[in-house]
Every structure is written in C-alpha cells, then in structure tokens.
Image (cartoon, rainbow, N blue to C red; front, side, top):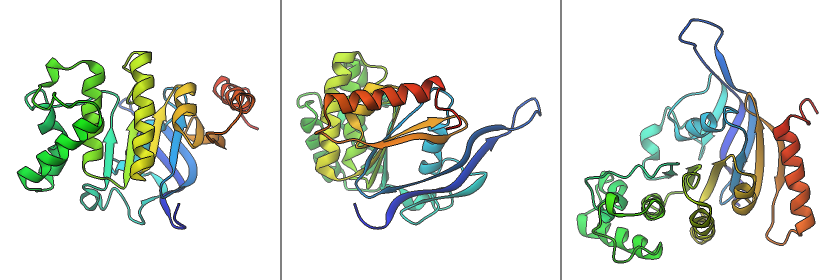
Length: 256
C-alpha cells in the first residue's frame, strides 16, 4: 500500500427523506475509515445496514449529508466525470446489454472512453480468454449461463484497468459451486492487477475467502467489528473471526 489512502470517509453521515414527510431515514452515522492503495476490503453486514449507501458514496452517485468522502484525494460526487475509467464496478446482476455480443459488452467502457475499435476489441478478447470464455466472444447474453454472464461482467470491469474496483454482491445470484470458483479467480485477478477493491457481501464465508481486511457494519452504518485476514491464518483463528462476526450480526456486541 502507498502512504496516501486511496479512499477516505471522515465522519460521514447520510440521511434520506421519507415520502410521507416523516423523520429522515438515517443510513450512515459518523462513519470514518481509510483504505490504502491495493487493499482488498470486504464489507459485511445485514440487509439495510448501509453497505450499498457507502458503495454509492464512493461511486459518486450520491453525496454525504455530513462529513466528507474523498477518493484519490477528490470528491467523487463533485468530480464524477474525472473518475471515468478509474473506478470499475461489478454488480449483483451482470447488467449486460442483451443486444450486444459478449466481446462488445466487455469493450463498452473502452468504447465510451473513445478507444479505437480494433484496440478495444483486442483488449476485450484477451479478458474473455483470461476468464475462460475463449470461443464465446460472439455469443449474446441469452446464449450464456449465469456464471458465464457474470464472467463477462467481471471482464468488463477489469478491461479498463481501473485503479479501484467496487463489487456489490456479484456472486450472490450464482450456485455455490460456480460462485466458489469465480471468487477464487476474482481474488487472483485482483492480486495480479493491484487494484484497490471493496467487496460488499452479506456472506461470512465469502468475506473470509475474499477479504484481506474485513469490516462489519451495524445500522445505521458504523464499523462494529474490524480485523485483518491472512492466507496463513489457522482454522482456529478463522473460527474465532467467524464467532466475532456472528456476535455482531446477532446484536450481542451492540454498544460495546
């Protein structure tokens, strides 16, 4: 990691107005953390704990109600256009365009950034091959399995060589065997590219498999538990982390 943090939350709060005019909904309260260049961070928590709101703040899709969010030293909401090509996103659903071939879906971001056609198609083809989809470049999404479509989505995210990769439960819609295989490949790709990555999940096992640092959110979003993970952790150490996570998710550690 470099000395300067890549992503910083400084006492961030986020509220949303209610349609009935009632008290605003508080999604995030006084949230602070810093993520360094090249870190792989898993954010875990129950549905509604503010994980996706934090994700959207980093993407620059919304602005905080209080505090400050900076990404590479800039305000992602105010400088949204500046981040084109610097942040890649993998969603829960593949979000492929059904009228575009696999190779054209992968090349979409490069096309939007005005890269010449031959160059972007070469890059897209290389990423499809890297993700085991050699021979499927000309297939349309309807002809691909769910796992294959998500591979196309991952290839699209990596093709632009983003500095930061944000992942919002990208394997939750897949069967366990396919999801397990893709998680392993995905983690290896992150290590090879050196991208800073935030992985949002509600699965303890997924967080333990993917993260090098793990943050568990309570609601409204705050860090209720945080730990570092390493490949050489013993089974007993991982079991201890599982136990701490379960305590947080069950509310046993609330207020501690």
